[in-house]
Amino acid sequence: MNLFNKRRVNAGARFLLVAACFVVVVQGLKVAAPVLLPFALAMFLAILSLPLMWGLKRHRLPDWLAILLCVLVNVAVLGAVVLLASQSIREFQAEVPKYRQQLVAMTHGILTWLTDRGVPVNPNAPMELIDLGAVLDFAHGTVGRVAILVTDGFLVLIIMIFILAEATVFGDKLRAMAGRRGFDPARLSKIVREVQQYLGIKTGVSLATGTLAGTWVATLGLDLPILWGLVAFVMNYIPTIGWVIGLVPPLLLGLFGGLGKGLLVAAGYIGIHVVLTNFVEPTLLGRKLGLSTLVVVLSLLFWGWVWGPIGMLLSVPLTMMLKIALENTDDLRWVATLLAQGRDAGISTAAEHDRTLGEDADDE
Image (tube, rainbow, N blue to C red; front, side, top):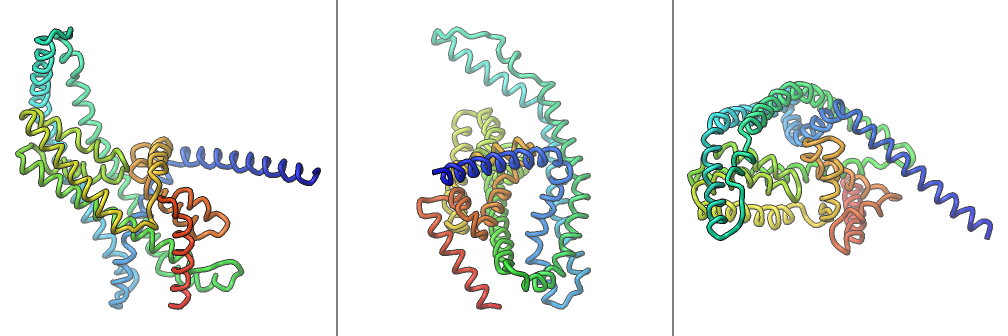
């Protein structure tokens, strides 16, 4: 009995120790955000760039040239996105007064409709609720954040260069470490491969979402279709609520043209979301990379609290990396089972883990 009680005390002490370590780690993530955020972005870009770099190396290009071409591709893509966003935001700023007038007129129409039906309302409510200064401050702040993103982008690219340079010799290091007890290079290869798969598919689906959304609002004759396409592209990285946030601005513009046009905007966005996010993306990713809906929402809240809006964008990729890493750790695979989606997630995770490691061993 004494031994049993002692084990219970030790288990409680270990739990408190783990909880205390978790609090320390979270606080460290918040304090070190200025350093960790650029590193996280650089790591994701590097993971996406690795297939291109290995393809260039297979064509017998030297390491430095393969890295340089990968960096140039990333600079070209990111530069095009930033230029499009900056131009669209400037156009949005120029149209803000017109949108304010339309919003005031639409609100007055709603209030008049309510008044005619005996609902007591304040006729000055539109002017109290709509603050042009706040809208302009938001627009200016958005432009400022874009400028900060460009500045931080240089640091991100520098870090990405060093990560890619290290990746060229990482295989040799893995082979040197393979002789150590308890180390399995196949597991690390599996983690990197699955993270690449997830980020590549998520980026492709987000690109399709932005393209379809921009094309849809352009077809309906709304202003700034490029801006709303970019917003839909970025917001698709935010799980659960991202597509709703991307829907709000074009929905308001559609309502300025009448209830029918607003409904068409909403119907198009809902259709795009249902087809791409609920059918195409799960089909491409497969069940083994799925996260529980509760875990997705909690990760959104957690990383948003730790790292702000950028953390919300990276919430699912970060949680997915954690889940993949835990799947490949024997003593912590049960945590990956809790994060996974579906009642049989633990069985499929373990079976997929053993099968993949067997394939990697055969390849070696």
